[in-house]
Image 1 (cartoon, rainbow, N blue to C red):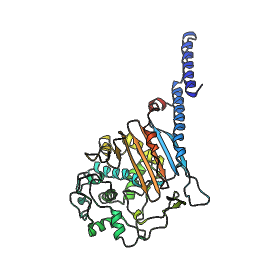
Image 2: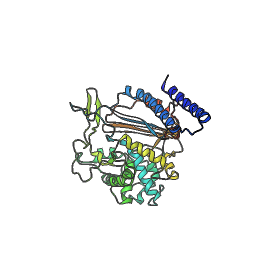
Image 3: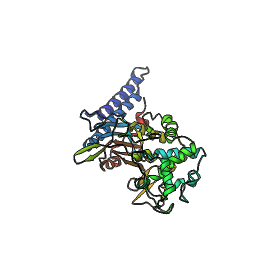
Length: 391
């Protein structure tokens, strides 16, 4: 008899006993049916966890995975090592913080939305209302959020004009260079969707100028600490005269070459915040996801804007909200990939089936497409949380 059949048989046996005692014994018999349902839920979760393990073990990831369904963490596991260059390798842990690269954008967007609900800005405000030295007209905060600004890439500009790559390149340095160099934009404001990191770097600068706080402080005080994201932070080189050889973190990023992994050195562009450079753990990302569901930071009427397509036409069947990607291939799923300087990541929020997946890797190894086959497969589904959360 399998576990599922066992628990069903146990429930029927106890129910029959209750019925028999009520007829024959003439006294009350109390059966804790809550515990029966809870155990059945745990059994289903255990079965689901085994299925998830069969998906991720063959992927040979060097990173940490968390999968949740119906409001409960089903599976979390660490694969590989913190620093692959060491002879004695420390294994990764579930509470290790990784650089989440472009997955940082969903948090930058949240910061803008927090300021919006406080009446300190409007999404359709001209960016120059907050950054007057920006030499481009007609660009709104909404265009930055939706990647429709048409602005040039800041990394290409910095590579061409920043004189010393041993010195950090910051958000303010980026703005100064835009004002002086005036590089040609890629397109007219609002004309088309074009994913570009400069949009979210400028949004971080807007957060600083509106809040009159450093971006890293605002994020800590307004998002990470209120939600209990105790392992999350924005990496800052503010005030540092030189770029360190490696970022001061236990989990080092690695580039993958034919001869093997090589630890990725720190980079002068890591001084730019908002589009990247946030560190977090899979459990902190899960905490953020739950905060979205429970509207701990923003009411639903405001939060839903993040998941609304920003463009009327879908480019290659893809669109972008406020810090979240979406695709026609997977309706009801909102996601973001991250890839920067030795790290890769993927966060998927499936609202249709109440599923959540976070994958954080400290190598540039591609995350296999089988991930999408797994999270799209609805042949096996856990019961709703109300059934097995009874305790």
